[in-house]
Image 1: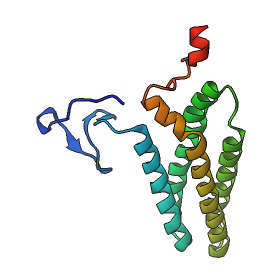
Image 2 (image 1 turned 90 degrees about the horizontal axis):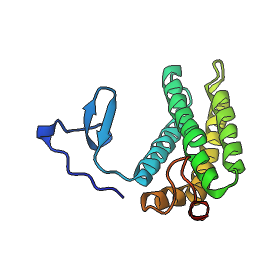
Image 3 (image 1 turned 30 degrees about the vertical axis):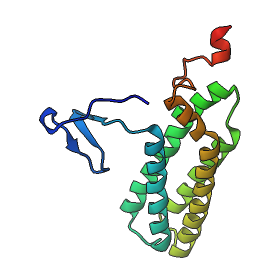
Length: 170
């Protein structure tokens, strides 16, 4: 893991809402050294907590539900377009189960956010979404997180263009 010098108030460092300390430059935020694993797990926790709240209040207003849908879709898109290709490149094989589960999650999300759905139906969709998201977390923790951890320690290439140690030495 890379170590960065501590950010100081004099340099413009300020705390962010997520508890990290960083510098704000335009639309980019540079944070103090935080592991990818911590960010990964933090994202999971936030989505799981929000889902738990939504299950208990399925009649929440459409705007709140749509904001959650945007967050979950961004999470799934990052997994599909960023993390999975890196791991697939490293493993030399597709992550078919993860991608299928992500499609299922998007389908459940579409049903839960559809307008005109009654509270009982929305609650069933949200419970199914909560259960499927837990499966998603377990599957990613078993197959993706070890690669993220190894990447931080230098054991796994962290970019799509990198080659695995076996092909780099050939």
